[in-house]
Length: 167
Image (cartoon, rainbow, N blue to C red; front, side, top):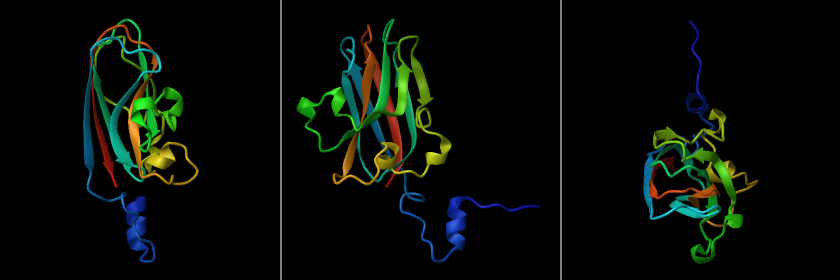
C-alpha cells in the first residue's frame, strides 16, 4: 500500500514550512445577481463582485436566462480602484482570465462551473492576481470580477453567480 500526500499534508509534515493563508481557510461566497432590462451590447461590462487580490478562488457557479439568438460573455478582472463611472472594456486587467465566450444565447444555463474553464486544476491555490496574469501583487487591494460582452445579446434576462474564495 502506498500513501501519497497533497500539498497541504506535505506542508504540515515540514515544520519549517507554514501552510499559506488561504490554502486552508474559511470559504467566503459572493452571491451576485444582475437583471438585464434589455439586450447587452458588445463590450458592455457587468460588475459582479469585489474580492481581495490575494483571494484564492475555488469555484464560480453561473446561471443565466436564455439571452437571445446571439450573445457571449467573458469573465475576468478589473482593478478594484477603477472609476466605475468611466470604466470601459479596455480597462480590464484581464477580461477573460476566468472564462471565455460563455454562450448565453443557445439556452438558459443552470449551475455551470466556470472556475476552471480558462485555467486548469493546477491553479487551485493561485491568488486572484496570479489568475489575472500579473507578475507581482498589485499595489491596490481588490479586484472587480466582471462579465464583459464579447458578442451582444438580443434579449433581456437574468444572470446570477456564486463566487467562492478564501483569503
